[in-house]
Amino acid sequence: MDRLFDMALVRPPSNTYENCVSSNPHKSEIDLQLAREQHRTYVSVLREHGIKVLESSALEKYPDSVFMQDPAILGVKRSIIGRFGEPTRRGEEDAILEDLHQTGQVSAIHRIESPGTLEGGDVIITDMQRLFVGESSRSNASGIHQLSVFLPNVTIVKVKTNLFHLLCGCSYLSKGTMIITPELVSPDHFPGFKFVKFDKKDAYASDALYVGNRAVLIPSGFPNASKKLVDGGYKPIEIDLSEFYKGDGGVTCLCSPIYKLL
Image (cartoon, rainbow, N blue to C red):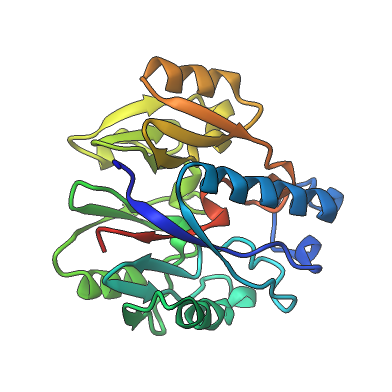
């Protein structure tokens, strides 16, 4: 299988999800019941593609905790527990560490310490022995440096970005190919890579999840993005994430993969 992970952790939306940190003007319209249905569909799609999904309990104290990608970067051999740049989310890191112990998926554990911040939405794992990290409002230079110390055998490339997270403008597919929105992230940051380029109006779909065998999970409602993936030889799998869009979340946000290369 050419994907980077075969297992992932997920967490369903809590009863407090409507109180998540979001700049989306439609945040007040979040439908919690629909969000739960969409999350169940998301989990089902992962399983349909042979991914072992480890389901954690909802965290009522943390409205954003459904966005499971952000607290940590998990690997088969080592995991890095992050430190949120968003203060209201601090504490979710401890919860995912407890989840790892409960599932038995515990590898060597490292933690990002103050003043460092590092959120998973800024980290792009590739199979090219390169890992890209957005220096953003959520992840800072200290956090990125600490990550490089924890992963001495991987080339860490820092990408300065004005985006909420680096994955808001690009994501990795397979075999040296990335989805990218050039108006938001310059392809020059990724020398040697090939690209499926999306228009700025389709930027939300550039946060995509490659699940193997050329299949790519993307949000529904972006026909031009789907066509570009098909033209590139990929199989887009469209999934409705309207209620997570309202919470400033995307396809990759909803799971924490356990990467085979880490």
